[in-house]
Image (cartoon, rainbow, N blue to C red; front, top):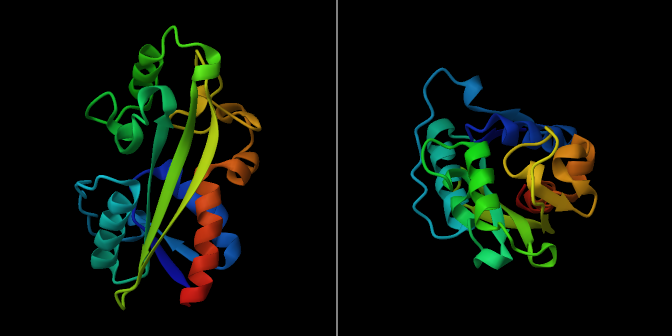
Length: 195
C-alpha cells in the first residue's frame, strides 16, 4: 500500500522508511513527484495541529493516504520550550547546530538534575475519505552540558536517553526508544484499524 510522507526533512524520512517499509508500506516522499511540494505554514499551537496541517497538505498534493510528523524537544526547566518551535528555535533558516547551542546557552549553570526534558512526536494521518488520526510518542531524558557524537540529528548530540546519548546509539536502538519510533509503532496499530 502506498503512503505519502509529507516532509522535506530527509532525516525524518529515513526514520519513517526504516519503520514503515518492513510493515508492508510503499513509502513515497516529495522526491517521488515531479511537482514541488508546497511550503506549509505551521500555524498550530500544538504538535498535533501542525502535524495535521502538513498531512492535509500531503493529501491535497498526492491524493494518497498522507502522513506527517511534528516533533520537538520540551525542557522542563524552560517551561516546555522550545516545544513546537524546536526546528526554528534560533531563527530562520532552520539550523540544528544553532538551535542546539541556543538551548545549551539557556541552560548554562542549571544543575544536571534539573536538566530534564523529553522529545515529543505527534504523527498525523489523513485519508482520502476524510478520516484523520493522530498519535503521539515521548522519549524522556536529560539535556547534557555539551554536544557529543554525530549520529542522529537535531538535538540528539545533547539528549541523554535511557540508552545513552542519542547521537551515540545505533539507528535501531534509537528507533526502539525514540519519540518517533514509539509514535510510529502506535500509528501502525491505528492504521490497521482504519484499513
